[in-house]
Amino acid sequence: MRIIAGTHRGRPLQAPKGRGTRPILDRQKESLFNVLRASLPCSGVVDVFAGSGGLGFEALSRGAERATFIERGRPAVVALEHNVASLGFEGRAQILVRDAFAVDPAALHPFGLLFLDPPFPLYRDRAERVHTLLAGLLAAPGCEDGAVAMLRVPADAVVPDWPQGVQEVERRPAGESVIILLRGDL
Image (tube, rainbow, N blue to C red; front, side):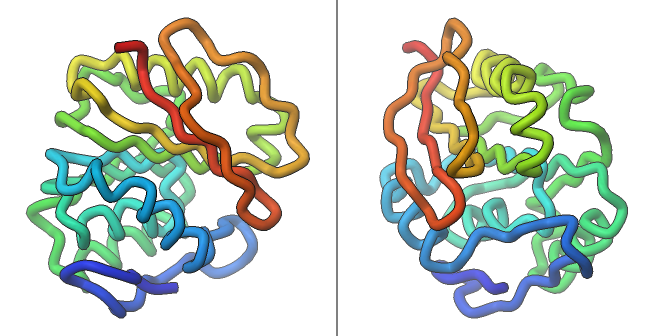
């Protein structure tokens, strides 16, 4: 796993050992960031269910000023800490070690990009709760006008209706997953 473009292009990322995370493939990441090109640079990015932080680090490399990583799994947090240090992002990255559903959206730094890549079993069991979390983050005081959110879900998942305040912009198949781009109501 590596950063594919920007100031840190080609730099490797450490991933937690085991099958607890499923990093996005390089070709999927490249396709996603081609779509998000107009959103970068931005003041900040929030990477929820961050795993090893591949999406947030890619955004930092491409010009995001800062990133907040939200992750509770200890092996993933260790990988995040290693990646922050090895990439030299200490002054631009914040790791919140907690359950994503317990994060206070009002406490987040300003952001123009939001990534949610929940574990697929969690999404299958609690999709509506993930959607409510997404809506709360898009309504946060730090969420900038025109912010874009990305949600990656299993291709076979039933995607419930979006909560009030959330608009689906685009849906793209990506291997065994689907990438959904969203915005808050403007």
